[in-house]
Image: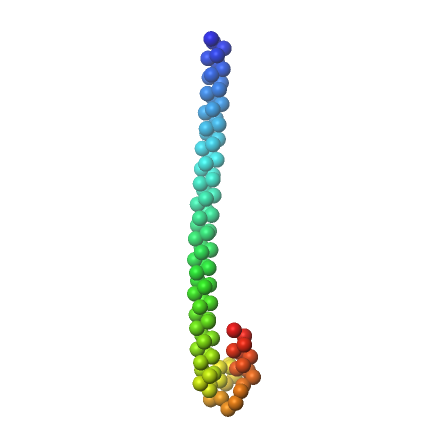
Length: 97
């Protein structure tokens, strides 16, 4: 009977140590999860910002295309001046998009 009690005490000590180790592991995993969640949120925000920027750039190119269609230069060298025929610089600028 005494041997069984001693064996149970040893088993309980081992279990207590294992529970402590598991608690530490859970805490570590929770910290990692929080870090990953935070970095994921930042990536998501950055992706949204990039999408908005691309949409704005698309709008800008559309507006430049309209200006060119209305007969104005959109190239940096002669921006806003009336066209007197096709401008290779403007065409190259439009094709960049």
